[in-house]
Amino acid sequence: MTDRPQLDLANYLPYLINRLGGALVAAMTDKALAASDLTIDMWRLLAVLSYRGAQRQVDMVAMTSIEASTVSRLVTRLARMGLVTRQRSETSNREVVIELTAKGRSLVERIIPCAHKLEEMAAAGVPAKDMAVVKRSLRRMYDNIARQSR
Image 1 (cartoon, rainbow, N blue to C red):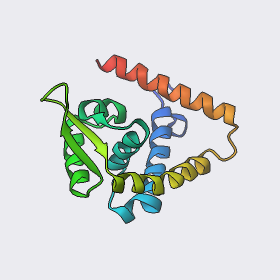
Image 2: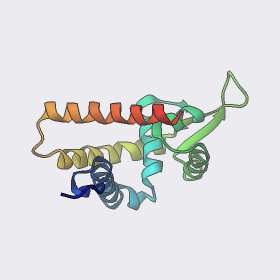
Image 3: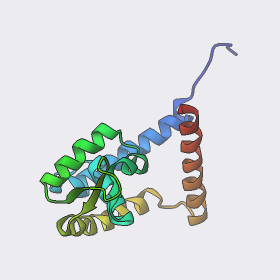
């Protein structure tokens, strides 16, 4: 037996998460996003707006885990594509509120079934109660890391 530190990559949580995430992003891009000239980060923004309605741009940073400067650039691009609108907040002139347009809503509604199907493919053979534990555990682990980063 050796005393040097060892790491079994095939059983290392960050690697496993990254490998799955990369495969999911590639599949989602190929199957649903590329045809509409969307990136995965653009999709995250559209999905949040679809689910939660109009949002302050600053809040979308936290909801999507995308850097503020990147969110700003992506919102500009999505607005040029006619998928979102930007308006100054009624409560603060410094805040920008982002909202889906009818075109954006229609696009998201076409992509959502593919997103659900991709999640179903990834979870094939995993019991629903185990998936609930996985999702709850991943949220907790993210919170643990985020808390340490503050």
